[in-house]
Image 1 (spheres, rainbow, N blue to C red):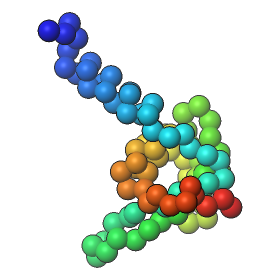
Image 2 (tube, one colour):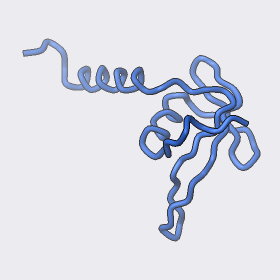
Image 3 (cartoon, rainbow, N blue to C red):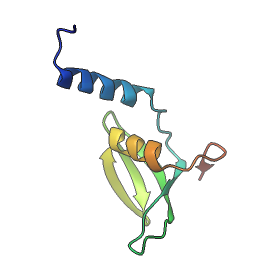
Length: 89
């Protein structure tokens, strides 16, 4: 029997998942499967332009946007389209 609560185990599992995700690369374009309003899936491209310790800055419709690195990695892990290693622009 573990001395930790189940919520602690869930947090540990989440941290391990985040650590195992591949690191993001500046200049790489990531393709992500989107879900349109009409139910048709579209592919969107997000180019990473900057990384700091906790946030990623990427281009969305030509405008710079910012989110947490873990959020971007999770979305790419769940909806990303793997190709030849990404496009460099």
